[in-house]
Length: 288
Length: 182
View 1 (cartoon, chains in turn yellow, blue):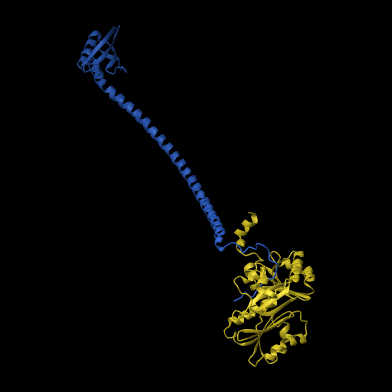
View 2: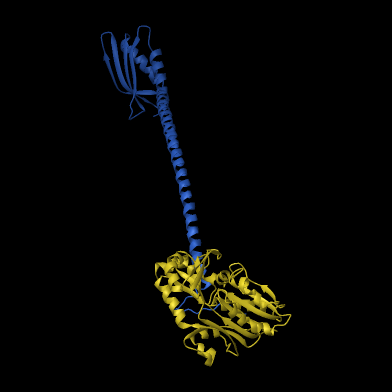
């Protein structure tokens, strides 16, 4: 037994989960500790420092690939954390799709990490890493796949700057799953005809939910600013199937983000409810 | 409800979930014992200080009492010495009391021509019943000695080892008197 072990017991640190344990929320892993959250988009990175109270203290953004930005900001990020632990939101080179009848046997989350083929079957691609969000009432599931090489490159870049990944997730997928969870938990909302749109710094995910069922999903990352054509092309199928009673639920990464200021017009006359809160992405990642 | 957050990072082996919450009793007990130790140390320290103060006060009181005792013992010794002296006087008075009639009888036995020049009555310390009599009479001669001895015999004394030396004008007589009751 080393002195550090004794110190950890006496400071109660030994009773907290390790910072990179994915089975615990960010708050449980970093109670009263500072941390940094980074969102990696294509050609652009944004970040937020989380103070000891778990609140967003400062935000920043820079153009460039993660490797370049990390080289410039690595020391600052490290100084803003206790031990260099950083939470990553991966916002490029991923795709979200809608699947049905995936295995939901007990311990499927662990199985998805260790042996994703047993969950995904023939849809499994060894060059991808996966995340799944199940509809609690139907057989539908959202499946997110991202490049394994991308994750490894980020981990390598962080290691080279003495940073440690506490978590690497897809911010857009997590935000979408969170919004769908909120809808499922709301008795008034869950049976309505909804178009659920989530936007995260150039990435858009749109889900059609009707009568509690997920009927259609389209996702695209790396949308350039002002690329109306791409956004319009994504939204058009939902508008075509929309009824007068269809509502749009929108959640962006931050209040008055890029979508509501540039692309909201594409929903036409549909009633849009914006569920976005201030520092929406950072608060969400820091709480969960 | 599904957990909305997932994790894509390469998982490290043996990631700890932390010790079971019940084990928090260990550091809690440590802090409790440490606090109790500090409290008891303070308590015993203050107790020791109080004891030392009391001990010093008691030492002062003992010193004062011993000084007072010495004064009282000295006073008592003075009284005892005076008492012994008084007892000695009393014994002397008591011891001389039986000899007073002898001195009175010797004095009254003198005729008009005779005077007592010297009279000594010494009791033998080793044999208190024996009183050594030395008498010097001016004038009167042997007749006066006989008269005086008769007066002493009348007091139930007897004489032993009597010696009489007749001088030109005086007569020396010495003898050991023993009371007939002895």
